[in-house]
Length: 151
View 1 (cartoon, one colour):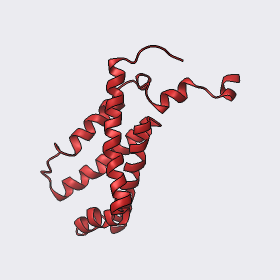
View 2 (cartoon, rainbow, N blue to C red):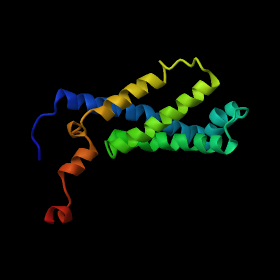
View 3 (spheres, rainbow, N blue to C red):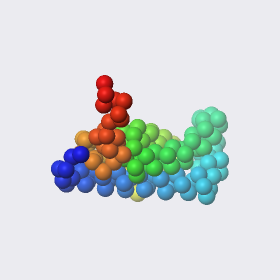
């Protein structure tokens, strides 16, 4: 077990990861359990973009999938489990949402929604994963299974 104190950078990574995890997890929770993925798809994707060049099936699929991705990837970030995978999934969500907003309004104001999330995401993604010692990923890496330790 590593007894080295957590660095300032380690704390910064932890705080950014948890903040981003909370933002996406809570949004996903509301969209999945209060609004519902189908209602989310209908209200946020299908109806607003019905007259666009995007096929209806893609609007339904994307609109119903995004809440689940936000919920699961947000939970993964909160735990620090498969952090890189969660960050990449949420990065894809941000790209899709940005595309949609720009399609509806080419002068969409990014400062309130996309930029804060993207900044936290990019910060955590760019920092060394080994410094995020308050994560499930770190715990798993530092506690090899007995089978793995024998080889």
